[in-house]
Image (cartoon, rainbow, N blue to C red; front, side, top):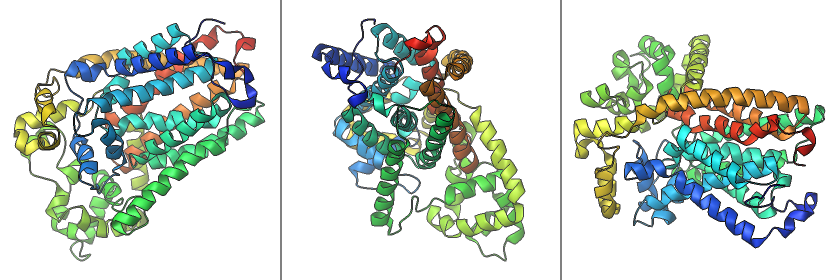
Length: 489
């Protein structure tokens, strides 16, 4: 066996020899993971400051002001708080990089039994240069935790026997936290909680039992849902996953046309608040909700349609009724629109989505009128403001468009390699390779359906997950050259 960063961690009775792992190897592994986390921070370092998105300031603010947001949860803000300690936001970026580097380390170790330094280095550098991963690990947004949901549930579901007890506990808590930080993660996790047991059943029937437990994979979803329900019960007095959750799908129904048509025929007799703007309802969900995110909308600065009728509280009161009526009258139309949006979302994953528009918005309208992050940083992180203000992102010199072709080509090559790998794994009856490929593929499909059909179609939603295909190819490529008897137990 080649020299490794660390031998396989103690997985209970299945691998008794791993209990004797040398302390020096453990320290070397920890050092390699920390270094990998710093490498994943290179985009933020090159930028001169952590990358910011439209919602970054809101996430920074929530825990500091003991507040909540109507279209999300405050758990990502709670995650950030102990790292920045109202001093600087840089530790958040480094922590995110280390978390994802450690997950990648666990995937490699569970797949190969050991983590060779060369293999780990190649995987980290390839992902850092040719994937969207560092553009999310360096960003002050919960999107990095979408792949954490997928990898965490997959490791628990299909490789738990290859993990030490403390690693299983850690993954349970980390994955539950990752699910709780964004509302789109909840349906994604619920979908995986159905997919993973189904894959266990299929693998068992094909005589490829997985070294894991579907029960462990489901626990994080249960914990996260319980936490979100408890929070909303305390804050809003309603035991619900999203107290204003009907507003987002209504915006999608309006943009697609069915709800817009329904309102134009039902108004003014129906008496909805939206009847006041029935003739100016947009065909863009972002315009309805926020006034739009593209540069044209920024320059117009007319505000959102939703705000014109009183905001999300008013719209929420009638959103459920409008959605039900729309489905009764135009179900097939909406189903067709949702399907098309999901297909569109599945194929859209350009790196850096929204980062350039954020800078353009600040440039067009000025800091006071456009960038809420200016106010939040000046108030809570005054020492960070000069670096933020002078970052390449805000100076609009960050090479977002330049990296996209390289990422696209690398992604297509990775997809071709992944298909070849899973084909060989099926012939060799290797369960982990098959199960992880299926989990990643179905997560990509589920993510596209959730975000495309119920929200808005944006590259960043699929971009936050697409790098998992490259990770799969990098981790399992050696099986194309490995003899079946060399596979880890």
